[in-house]
Image (tube, rainbow over all chains, first blue to last red; front, top):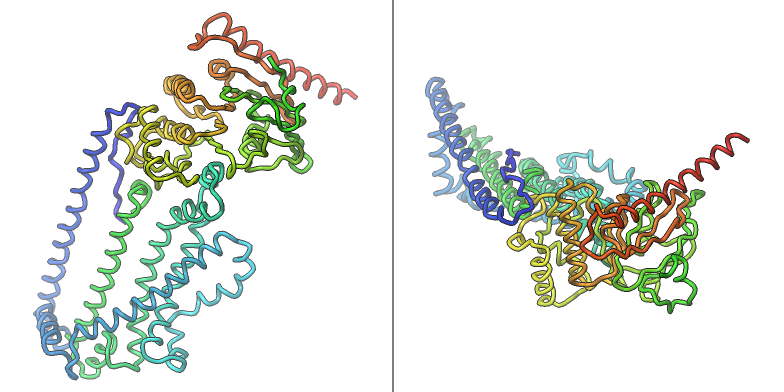
Length: 286
Length: 271
C-alpha cells in the first residue's frame, strides 16, 4: 500500500515536545489529498484515450465511453430487456456476496485463532484442511447447482472463496504475537482469556482485516462466475450473459464497470476501517 | 542485619514480605542451587551477578509464572501467584503494548485486577503526574522515545498497589544520561509510594546506588555469594569513598567466585 512514512520527530524525554507531534499529525492529513488528485487525472486521461480509439475504430464491437454512459443511463432508468433495474441486479449480487462473506468471516476468524493458538491441532488436521484450499470456488459450482438453490447456493460459493483468506491470515497472524506481550499480561495477573482478548486479538486484528480484503476480492470473482452459470434472473453476472446473447457490448461493459466499482468501494471501506483501527501501526504498514 | 538465609527458618510466618528458597533445574542443568533470601516490606533489594547467573529464570520464579523444581517463593506467607498477589514487572525490553495508548498501558494492571473505572482513572492520573508524562496520555508507544516507554512501564508497575515490584535491568538499553536520570526517578517514586522492590542488574554501581541491600549471585549453578547492606544515606554520591568501597566489596565477591571456579576447572583438567 501507499507508504505513509512516519514524519513524527522522535520526541526526546521532555514533555514540551507534545505540541510538535500534534502538529506533525495535522500535516499528515494533507498527504492523502495529492494521490487523490493524481488518480482523477489518470482516470480522465484513460477516458480520453479510450474515446479517441473508439472514434477511430468506429465499430459496434468497440463502444466508446459515451455509449457506455448512455447504456448505463438506459439500464438505470428503464431496466434491462425484462424490465429489471440495474439497482436490483447490483443489489442481488451484493447481498449474495455480503451473506457468504459474513459466514466466511464468522467461521474463519475463530478457526484461524484455534489453529494459530494450537499449532499441534493444525498439524494434525493439515491434510484434511489444506487440499480444500486448492479447489477453486468455481470448481464447486456444478456441485452447488445440484445441492443448493437460490440464495444458499451463492452464499455457499462466496463462503468458500472468503473463508480461506480470512482463516489463513488469522492463523499466521497468531504466530506473530510477541512472547513478551503475553508475558506482560501474565505477570500482571491476566489469565488465558485475557491474553486472548487483550493480546492475541489486538495483534492479529490487522492480519484479519487484510485477509478480509483479500476475501472480498475473491468473493466478487466468484459471484460473477456463479451467476454466469445460471439459475437466476437477477444479478450482475446474469444481466451480462443476457446481453452477451444479444451481442450488446455496451451493456456488458456497464456490468463489468459496476462490478469493479462496487468491489473497489468495498475494498476502500475496509481500508478506511483499517486506518481508523490501527493508528498505532502507522509506521509498520498501510 | 539478617543474613540471606535467615528468612526461611519460620513456617510461612516470617518477618519478611517476600520469602525465597529455591533450587531450580532445567533438565540436567542446575540453574539455582539453594538460593535463599528474604525481602522486608518496602525494601529496595538489588540482585547482582555475572551474566549467565540465571536472572531471567529467577525473575520468572519470583513473579510466579514459573514454578521452581523444588523450594518456594512466598509473598505475605502465601505461594506467589500473579492472580492472587499484586505483582508488577518492569522488563528490560520496551514492554508497552503498541495498540494501547500511554494511559491504557499504565491502566493495564489495574484493569486486569478489575478495579472500578473511576479508581483506575484517578490512579492513572496520579502516577502520570508522578512520572512526568502529563500530556502524553493519548500517545501511542511508537510516538514516544525509548526512555519514555520505559517510564510508562515503570508507571504501570507503580500504578497498582503492588505487593512486589520486579525489575529486570530496566535501564540497560538507555543512554547514560537518561539512565542516570531514570535511576533517580525510580528512587523518587519508590520513596513517594513505598513498595517492595527486587531489582536485578549486572551493573554494580547501579546496584549500590539504588539498593537498601545487594545480594550477589554466582554463575550457574547460582548460589548466593554475599549479602551486602548498603547503609549510605540518599542521595548517594558514586564518587564517595564509602560508595566505592561497597562497590568494590560486591566486585570482590564476584572475582573470588570466579577465581574459585577457575581453580576448580584447572584442578579438574590437571587430573
